[in-house]
Image (cartoon, rainbow, N blue to C red; front, side):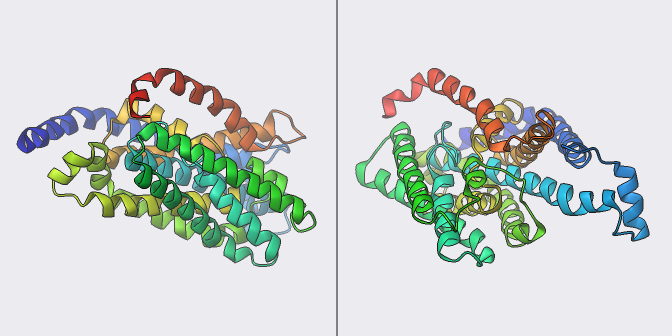
Amino acid sequence: MLICMRSFLHKLRQHAAPRAAITLAALSCLAACAFLAALCFGSTSLDLGAALRAWLAGDSSSAAYRILMYVRLPRALGALLAGAALATAGVLIQAVLQNPMAAPNVIGVNAGAGFVAVLLTALFPSAVGLLPMGAFLGALATCLLIWLIAAISGAGRVTITLVGVAVGSILTAGINAVKTLFPDSLYDVTSFLVGGLSGVTYRALTPAWQMILGGLLLSLLLARRADLLSLGDEVAAGLGLSVRRNRFFLLLLAALLAGAAVSFAGLLGFVGLLVPHILRRFTGNRHRLLLPAAALGGSSRVLLADTLSRVLFAPYELPVGILLSLLGGPFFILLLLSGRRYRHDA
């Protein structure tokens, strides 16, 4: 049986490789175009050529230079990193829970990261550097809580997702409670709760980008283990994988990525759910291809949504989290309607 399984995986790799390579190349081009669009378009027009000439000439007094370097560039980098982190975290959580409806925002991971970030902001307003680590710890604690409830109750995969939704609701109530109790410290928390990138600075990105890039690299190194976990616990154990230990490592990695993204982008929704499902149609379930595809696709989606949020209602700006939810909500409903085959696990 194990020999047949290995032979099947080998044939699957050979068949999916050309299409996956084309998909990765197309996604790379899309991400690059989306990044350039985020730099060029917004509520005010920007002559990118003039900004680049001012940068090369060292003319920091140029208005175009200032808009590019201190407004557009950190915001575009934030969208790039947040999209990649949340989409990759979604892929990992789906592999760990073996549930296609799992995602950081769906099972409450984003809410856990947001609760700790908001609490730290209320108690220690000047400790900006603590936010990425606090958000990571909140995301990790949420993942472990859901996993613990599942282990104690012996719940099925769909039930685990519903437990995550309930935990997320509790944590969201906690965020609102902190917001009510500390109104002066959290006067600008609304954009954080909705999810937005308007206030992103290099300072906010500095501790988080290292965690995200390290997490993305580590996820690629653990891609084969995610493949085995996706086959089911019995098959993975039969192929020599320590299921419990690797499931914990991947859960830890997903929490790291989601927490780092939430620390500067707020509670962006549906990136980790929507992107993996679309890209699986092109890359298949091999995580060595799905993970980089999801990172590129997530970056493109958040970059394009953020650019549209600035352009559609200019000079006013719609928080990007609202636009992402408007697009992601209907997709999640379609998933629920088409997920009847999973109900026997509940």
